[in-house]
Amino acid sequence: MSKFYDVIVVGSGIAGLSFALKVSEAGYRVAIITKKNSAESNTNYAQGGIAAVTSQTDDVEMHVADTLDAGDGLCDEQAVREILKDGSSSIDELIKRGVDFSQLGDGRVSLGKEGGHSKRRILHVRDITGKAIEQALVNSIEISEKIDTLEHYFAVELITSQKIGGKGLSLPQTNRVLGLYALDTQRGMVETFRAGAVLMATGGIGQIYQYTTNPFIATGDGIAMAYRAGVEVQNMEFIQFHPTAFYSKNSSDRFLISEAVRGEGAILRNLNGEAFMFKYDERKDLAPRDIVARAIDYEMKQTGARHVWLDTREIGRKELFSRFPNIYAYCGSHGIDLEKDMIPVVPAAHYLCGGVKTNLNSETSLSGLYACGEVACTGLHGANRLASNSLLEAVVMANRGAGAVSKYLEENTSDLGELPAWQDGDVRDSDERVVLLHNWDEVKRTMWDYVGIVRTTKRLERARNRIQTLDREINEYYWNFKVDESLLELRNMISVAGLVIDCALQRKESRGLHYVLDHVDKLDEAINTMARRL
Ligand code: FAD
Ligand code: SIN
Picture 1: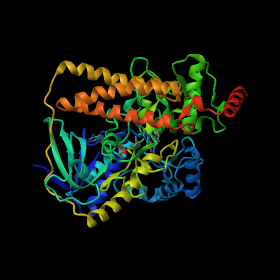
Picture 2: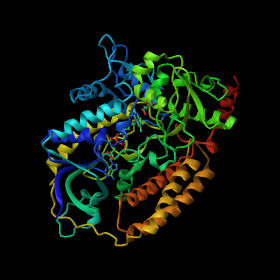
Picture 3: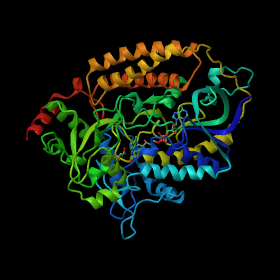
């Protein structure tokens, strides 16, 4: 027997939780389906903060200009204006939900600075902004009587009217979402959920890369699911590599060293101890991320180094300790004293600028399916996201989507009756699990080696061949095997990796985060080379 809710929200990061709260406050019954415990999300690890215009000396047009500049000509200007103008009201809302942003000694809010911002405009809770936001939202969810949170439920597949072909139901003419299948990972059973509308808020795809700042949940499930249901997806080639993740020789974990540290004066140095960002951009260490990550990549390749250094020694202990306690402690636990030592850093896959295409009401191309947060592509980020714009986008678009979904539910019958139950494969073979593990590594290595910061058409084509082979293999498994979390995640990762490569091969230019040597303008290259020599 299936379960019915007005709205099903997939994902419990900032986007899903904000949306669920708003929709429940409008009187609807909501289920949040989340594959781990509620707090486990990219949101929970956000450090630098949330960008919004809250000071008298700043204005929204300046924030718009910085966002457009970082986005390298591919932002949707209307989306940028509409989203950024709601910055300050979204901050008020987070404060109302219990987020206690850091303040200066005189009681004014403390505003951080990050790459590409012409002003100090990043609100933060020391360097654990994401954890503070996540906790405040989870607390609000827990006291809501209209929301059921189903932890350890893995959303597997959307159910659409087109897919089930009207079996026993009287369906509307247009294709729409009717619910979804989700695996209860603790019992190993797939359940059927009926819903008036579904929000996809499953976050990013960092785990398709060998080195990433993202936690394990970021496997692109929502994008893969939406794509399989025929929903439009765009801009997948724009993968943001964060310039400064902690380098460790013995581990593929990449703990983030926030850009806000450079905002307070830290500078990048090569292994000879020389500052180098002045050669690449007049904003030096606070240039937009695509520029800084490429500069580091270039410096590392020139010298064969495995990392560069981030020098925090000028900042001062008091500031380092009070503003960045989490980073201070992490580095300390790896034997690095930020007052005396430099931090070894490397770029790592961090954020997906593309995703499920939505309009400014978070509506996707499938009726009844909404998307917001990192899984969605609204046009705000263009070819490269401005630092700390994603938490803001998630809250603003959750609010806008919640308004739109209420209207949709008023106009559309929500419960169309019982849906077909899930048909599982029946093969269980633990030997074959080894192959899955191997394929998991192969996706991550292929993407890292061939679809990274600097690309070539030849390497992209090589990656496409490998991913296509993996795709054929995983689909064979999928239809025969009893599904479990790792099989589902691997299938989704392969699918989004394929989308990243296809989009990358389709874009015949170098722009923003998509830097392809074959398409680097000869004149640009000559100018860049000259600039490097100055
Ligand atoms: P997430 O927070 O990632 O939540 C996704 C949710 O979906 C999770 O609950 C996950 O378990 C669930 N899920 C996924 N797949 C399924 C499935 N199949 N079934 C059920 N549940 C599923 N941005 C900023 O603006 N400022 C910052 O300072 C900042 N710092 C960052 C630092 C780090 C280390 C990282 C990794 C990112 C940072 N970002 C920052 C980016 C930002 O944190 C994310 O873009 C944002 O939090 C995404 O929120 P979300 O709600 O869309 O997704
Ligand atoms: C950081 O703190 O450097 C991350 C900010 C972001 O990803 O927006």
